[in-house]
Amino acid sequence: QVQLVESGGGLVQAGGSLRLSCAASGRTFSIYVMGWFRQAPGKEREFVAASRWSGGSTAYADSVKGRFTISRDNGKNTVSLQMNSLKPEDTAVYFCAADAKGTYFSGGYKANEYDYWGQGTQVTVSS
Image (cartoon, rainbow, N blue to C red; front, side):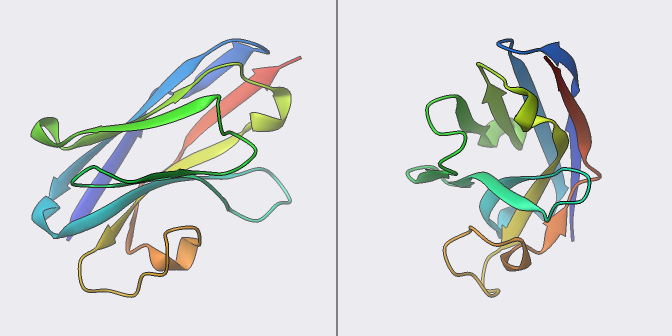
């Protein structure tokens, strides 16, 4: 199995920045894609960004494109989400997720494509 531990959440004013990190352990050799999702109260979990574990391909939700950047450091088994120009509507619990090689996958935009999840970290953006 794969274990994911997130860090970096917190409270920030609108226009500010935060950097989230996700540390992966266990059978990290099995990871194909890493993704970030977020969920606000009363809303469904939504796609934020994703990256091939080996690099080369990234994807972003339209709502964060140009403001957020996903990156990975395979040597440290981590993936990060740099969030700039934060808006109050970015307030949510942010989850790191991993898709295992050989399992169902259809582009990385849906939560049910991922096999492992972190515990989530709260991001609150004040107006």
